[in-house]
Image (tube, rainbow, N blue to C red; front, side, top):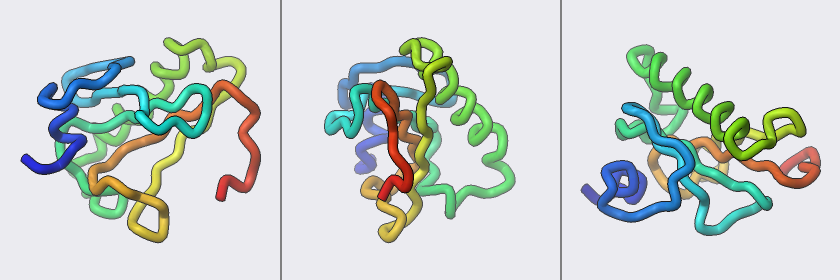
Length: 113
């Protein structure tokens, strides 16, 4: 298994986990872009939103609900947070495993990039 996020999900690579369910894992980003920056990944290897198929619908929904749970756990649900899903090289995706960025802890400007 060479995918770094698959290795994190399996526990082979340690991470500072925020949330863990049967299907998703959330952990602090090692290179945070905001005071709160958590990555939420499915345990199943799905390369990106662009590679998602109808059979992935349940895990995609669980991924988004996990983002909400992370925001609630880190006490930013009321003040606000951003969820970002980068897809492909031009979309800024650097790891070929679907992942959501949960960003919070400061006022986030728009447009993001």
